[in-house]
Amino acid sequence: MRIAVTGGSGKLGRTVVRHLQAHEHQVVNLDRAGERGPGFVQIDLTDAGQVLDALTGIDEQAPQGFDAVVHLSAIPAPGLATNTATFHNNLLGTFNVFTAALRAGIRNIVTASSETVLGLPFDTPPPYIPVDEEYPARPESTYSLSKHLEEQLAIELTRWHPELKIIALRFSNVMDQEDYAAFPSFDADAQLRRWNLWGYLDGRDGAEAVRLALEHRETGFDRFIIAAADTVMSRDNTELVAEVFPDVPVHGDISGHGTLLSIEKARRVLGYDPQHSWR
Image (cartoon, rainbow, N blue to C red; front, side, top):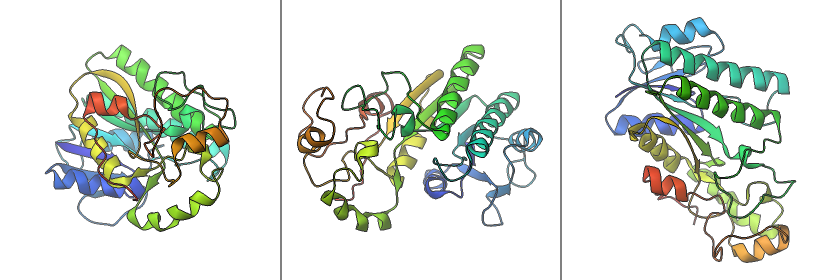
């Protein structure tokens, strides 16, 4: 496929671009910053004209346009910018990408949502553990609210356009291999990583999830939690949950180190099978 990846210069984006290229897709990175040359086009996604211009065709890069869009570009977490700037950048950029894709005839979109819509940082405990996609979104920050509203936008656009597919991937905290050196220190205090139920995501598995979502053939909207198969902790899940979330109902057997951000839906529907672990 000819694939436009927004935010391809970011932490996950770089890995996604390499992974898609390794699977013989033609990829163009649309981002504010990046390495000048083939495969990169500078763009401001909050400018609707630039986005439409890019997705309908780019001289010498993708003159015939694109078959699919992977939308990763965003202010990627709370507290990195003002609330107003975060909301404006993320929601307007996503609206521009989705609507430009429709006008360009693109019907295959994979977009970055966030684990934060599950209620992170869980100052209000989750309704049950492991968490999954079945309970309503619980955004607790402006960043998370922007991601929730992006999902709502996708729901309505796919309702208006039944031939459209938008898959939102609720990525956990993305890690590169060099980040794993810090993981053993988390064991000393269960509170350090309670905010996302001790979850994480290896960027290589995140990239695989993007490719699987692109290849998924069902139209309409769907959402999936994407995380590593294990936690960041050496301590057993039953011990951690009993200490930090003693009153939260537990569904099933959580003993061991399996992720408490349920990836069962992604496994079942997309064939997602994370292969990388800090262990």
